[in-house]
Image (cartoon, rainbow, N blue to C red; front, side):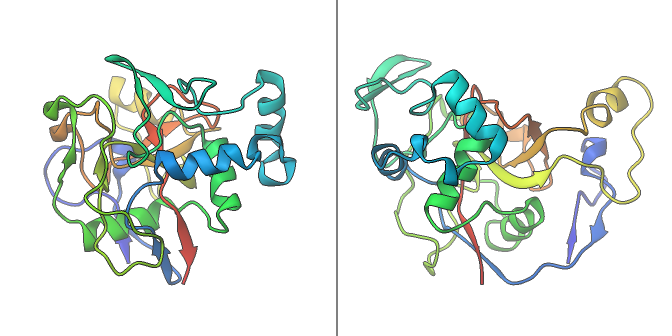
Length: 236
């Protein structure tokens, strides 16, 4: 299989070169994890279960006293959004999650996060059209998917683009044969290829024209401020 940007249209240097790789069979959930599902994780006391967390994440949870997603009220019934406080929609994708929270949820759900190659192959194969809730729709917050089914569903992949950036388990590293562009563009991407994880798909605050299947966003694992969520994966 191949991933990476192909063609003559614009892309950033970190999306190239296009290259071959091997992927074992895998499954992706047909939609991102919802608020209702993440609420189960919170109410199950997952933020106090060290066995679910990576070591650095557990130290952060204890130090910062994390008990719920960023912007969720302590009552767990409303959240702060760009339009002010609103009731938490149980069917909307959970957002403002760190990588540590996404990884812990996946472990709690007996699943895992996808690799970025798995995500891109699935997006190009099963969701080739860039359809989703982007900045132009004016929602400025994730909205529910048309259907709600789980990891092993035969339903088509939904919400691959827009709504929430999806954490992957892939370190932000150069592709084989990568060469940074000269000048400022080379400074932007190549110099950050350390201690970051890749996110895919765009969000409700991303312009639609800015996204393509090969686009690689990246943040440190503790970052929570972006519209970042997760989609579960499993080995097939």
